Image 1 (cartoon, rainbow, N blue to C red):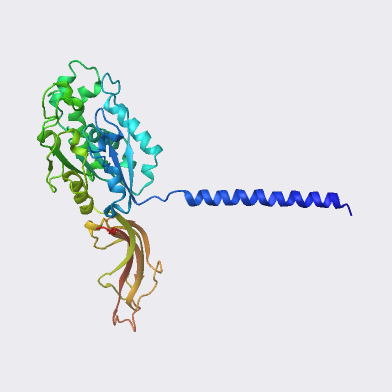
Image 2 (cartoon, rainbow, N blue to C red):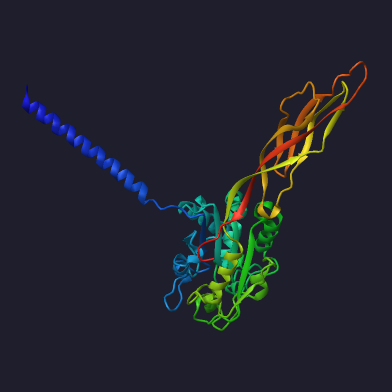
Length: 389
């Protein structure tokens, strides 16, 4: 026996096992460290001349962090979006920035969540709406948008600032009557079914912005950046717009969880809980179908409906049929009855056929009868209650 060769072989095998084990452990650890996504994500979107720090208050409180540590939002992740908007001489239009925003949200895996909600400041609300109109598949995941000071009808300050600053965003946000961008955006939003189900909730400023604060520098005087009417135009009427006792810049800088801006978002969030989908079974039994002696009773498209709960967004995904309480059926075909297809609105299309009993001594002494029992499988959405709610 060659002990040297054997020893070398053992060392090589041992090293191979160690390397393979290390790879497996490393792979397992990587899998464990990958964060699990919550069902919903809250996306913060800043406004004109803003950035991620637009949501930081004077006392250092950072709104995204306040939500991350709040048990009321236990089933939601938080993402803070950012897009380029320099203080002056910007080059990008709202349409271009909406595509940049979409690309960055995709890169951040925002659309991997079951539900997406937006907390948008000023221009951010415009960009979110423009983005969702262009991406209907992703828009289907969006439950609601909460906009703070979004100029749906434009801003006087943006119009004046556009006189000396060539930034195309100022033209997009101008309150001129010929602002086709904003009017087209609102018209498209109301006219496209892909976004009609998305709720829009609005908050507005009650104080003027000081001249040393962001866009207020344009006029070098106190000014209301976005008016009440512009900030609330097109928003849901079921939830009244929320007045925030501050200026445009500080709208999204709550000092703590008791602040009006924070409380408004929390109330909207709780009124629109995360929905989870569950499957339920429900049956319906038709009135008896009959046939006299030797007579057929058949139908290639017999319609059987089931009541659905619209508030739970119920829809039928499948159905099966069989005969029940059957008496004297002959020549049953198909057997069992066939559900050819099902409408999501709760109607099963059934093919059936049978013949009545035979005559006895040339006399018809009875009739065949039976009911169809249809079992429906229904998907419905039910609210998830988070620990803090």
